[in-house]
Every structure is written in structure tokens, then in C-alpha cells.
Image (tube, rainbow, N blue to C red):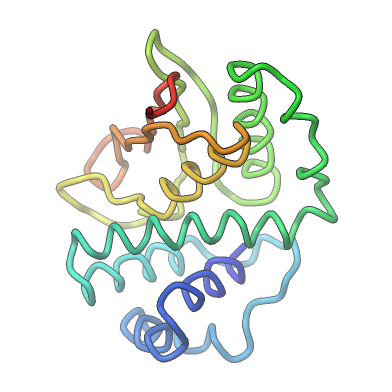
Amino acid sequence: MGRVVIQSLEQVIGKERLEEVLAAAGLEKLNKPLPPGNLDKKFPFEHVSGLMEAIEKMYGEKAGHALQARVGRTAFGSGLKEFDPVLGIADLPLRLMPLGMKFRVGLDVFQRVFNQFSDQVVRLSEDDEHLLWIIERCPVCWGRHTDVPCCYLALGILDESVFWGTGGKRFKVEEVTCIAKGDETCTFAIDRQPVE
């Protein structure tokens, strides 16, 4: 998964800027060679959060968050291509289900993927207006301390997974709690109704 994040970052900002971000994070070694394209859990959370922090420092908080979300959206597509032969995600019959059902089933599948193939701990919950994607152990803000939620890479991945799983509908996704700012979990509220 670390390989997917680095390749997505390069795709979004280019090779030269990627090298600058890696250097700012003290992670130059990750570009030569790239981490292997396998399902081993050997890409430390510190690397993910270090890259995200470096992006914020280089581009500023607002632009950095937008860039991280864009990298997350790109990472979802790249990860789907990279891991689908092993996971068979693209073959799910989601497109045939009613919207409400495909919404929940798609998130459940991705929750299981993250729990099985990373060291993240993710669970789903809901309230009257939202489905809640709850990360109990988050690589994006690992070891960080911020005043505002900062898990925009995860937000981008989640946003794009919902878009894909619902056949091209956009839903408002917002991080409402964040471990980096002292909350117990990183929680994302996903509206139940698509954006018009």
C-alpha cells in the first residue's frame, strides 16, 4: 500500500516534486527502489504520516489538505488496479444493488480490506443522517498533533471508494474527529444522500 501512495503522489505532483516531499519527510530512500507491490505489512505508519506532514509544510495547510485528498482519490484507483487480481473487488455485483445497499456493502468490503491488508483498525457505524467510517488506528495522522482534523489522504480514498461503489455518485464526506487533535478515533461522516 505504501507503493500505491508514493506512485499516486508522483502522479499528482510529478517526479521532481515527489523527490522534494520525500526529502522534506526524510524518506528519500523510498523512491529508489519503490516499496514492493505486495500485500506485506511493511510500510510503517510513520512514513505515511511523515509524507502527509511534509506536504502540509511545503504547500501550506489548506493547499496541502487539498493535495492529500487528491492523492487519496488517485490512490484508490491505483490500489484497485494493483490489488484487484488478488482481492477480486472489481467483480463485486455492487452495480446491480439498490443505492442504499451498495453504499453499505461497498464500505463493508473496504473496511475488511483495510483491516486485513494493513495495520489500520477500521469499523463502520451509523447515525440517523450518516454512515460513519471510524479509524481506530490511523496511519495518516500517526504520531501527529494538530488543531484540526488532518487525515485528508484517508478522506480522498474514502470519497473515491464511495464514488466507485455507488456507480458515480458523489456524497459529502467529512472528518469529524481526529486522533491527531486528541480525539479517540478518526471518524468520517458520510451523508446518506448524494450531492445534487
